[in-house]
Length: 337
Image (cartoon, rainbow, N blue to C red; front, side, top):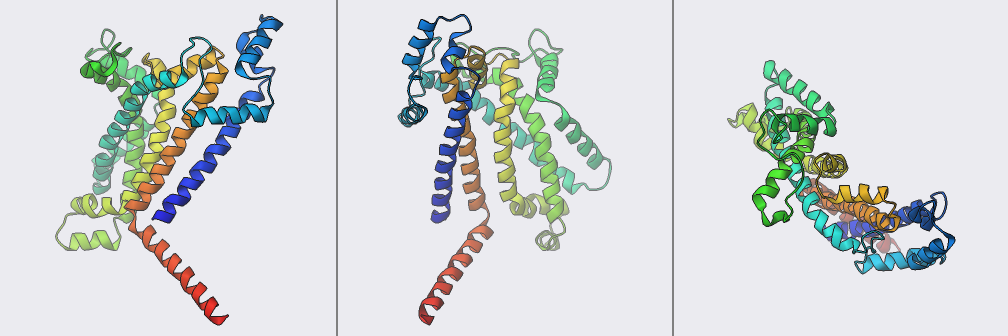
């Protein structure tokens, strides 16, 4: 297990370095000069020269890259050219909206998807199975934007048929008013949670259908459990590692779904900050934000891999057998020599 974690950490670091090169290069291959793009079409040569000097764009590309990486390692994501504020401080404030929204959406996805998937797998015959199947297909096919608009039309205060939840904005004092803050995230979380929950439901049903006829579930039923109970206990334990992997992928997908949802609900999160900075051509700040987002995706993958390894003892056993076999082969070769 320790060797596995060390290998994954090494791959994580290598992937971070490669991503930093890609992000840095993508902004440098834009038509024209980065300073010219940021300054605008009507800027004077003196203004371009001053901006290039301020941002260090008059240095060589390797020097710019290594300076940027050094700043990142020290937690310096740069300074906004529009507000003069630190990018890190703004990102931390915005993350107080985006991260709770993603976590709440993921929890709703699991609450919706896993129980309904187990129910659909245990009811293979009858109308309920067909109803759940068609509902999951319909819910999974709805784009997050349309789902959010429908939720606003039904539950949004002031515009919905049942106006009980805020449809726009976030409290100015943030989580100092936890009730208001949580209420403002319910509809956005439902917008992504229902769609992801439908996908989770279909996968849970498919995974349980695959193990329903296995010897483990059959033995559980032979011991007196009903089919539904055997799937809830034995079946879920067998497919748990795969569910962890799917949950990690769903978490990553929600990050991209939040890009649309935050703007729809006027939430001051990381996604809306990125869209605003791109529109304002604050490209140096965008560079650090893209790197931060890419690192977050990689971190999700790393945590998912480790959790999958912990939840599946078969992988640890197989790795131990391989290591033992390699050691044994080495010993035999050494003895022969």
